[in-house]
Image 1 (cartoon, rainbow, N blue to C red):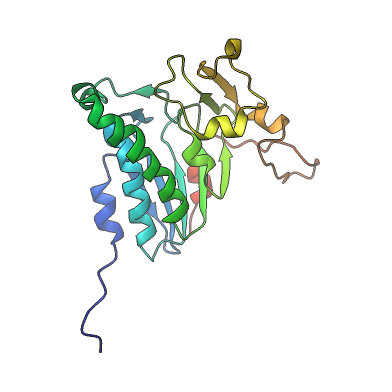
Image 2 (tube, rainbow, N blue to C red):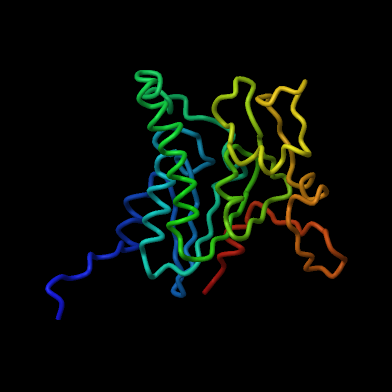
Length: 225
């Protein structure tokens, strides 16, 4: 026998409790884990704290060998349309520090964790309009509600501007007056028409038909074991 033992892997009941202020988690007996991001039980309100939690959650879920598929979504009828009123107080108190810790370091870790720390299939469910839907677009499969709208950019080039949205949409969603930081909101139905949104027709009506997916998408996808 080896002189050393394996480091224990994360246990679902433990990290479900640890992340409860940021994510509601359920897991079926077959290893399908549903992760619903929230703020006080409702749609996400962006903050320094919940921004950091994304990478922490992804690394933890990915380190649990009992997870087989992850479904990642928001809560309520919106994904994230608002910021926590006090959510960036830390940033305003020490901008040089948090400009790196929040805007660069945590953002980079969130993206790299989705790519490198999850060795399981992922399903992103865009449950409604919101910013930062790129984390759901990065999943292996992404489905969305009929009213899903994404925001690309902001008037001040600040919060809500994703590095991925311009890559997805720059050729089809021109900004106001040519300003690359202009605030734009666009529906994923438009992206479907432009051929940017991959679609599989399950109704037999032909390629490119959008299959409606309601705000209850996550629970319907998760379903019983």
